[in-house]
Image 1 (cartoon, rainbow, N blue to C red):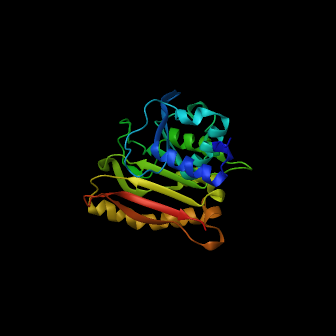
Image 2 (cartoon, helix red, strand yellow):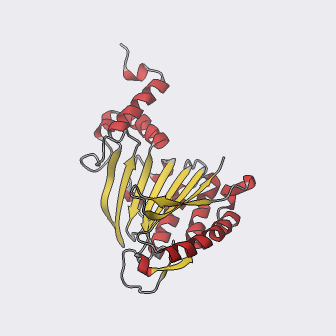
Image 3 (tube, rainbow, N blue to C red):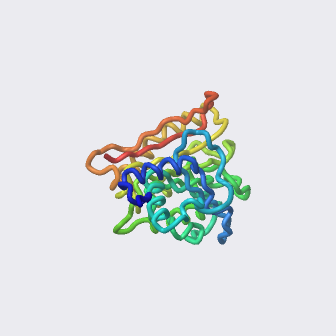
Length: 259
């Protein structure tokens, strides 16, 4: 008798694709208590937009647990078409925050959401350069990214989303060098790198000063920590403004691609 696994692999993966579309947002870990702060983890898959909220419960969807073959092939499709989203709040890195079957090391696409230095804590009153992160978050990213590099490293797309501090705490300077130093370890295997820096209610003078500095910052990264990604093509990073549906400026989108 014919079974699902008698189907050709390409048909089975089409089925997994449609099933994942029905479960596009899954909370894998909800405020995992790590030393220093909590970690929240999602796996996400593109959908038709009809599903807006995470699936009920915490963990991988139950249909994946039908048998070992479903788990293996279903996670493979997730790795191909979806991404892992990690939100650490000044936390210490701990791989126990991820399901044993779906660690960052098997993900082709990873998104890390961070708060800029001073974005969550009030203790520092001095003005912060755009893009400056808390040392705890830099250390978290460093530990995470070193863990996904290896002879079989599959990471190809990395997105870092930074929620900046309040604009009154933001200086007119830009400092992406510390983040670039952390990203250097995976630069050689990436096909696409995105850094999104969010702001709100930024005045024109501060915005213009920052945009004067951004090209120099990108050039320094292209020639330094991200040189392995830029390679011989010479295609360096570019930036554009993030504009909301209401026409308000919400930050900058920095992109590097490697053919």
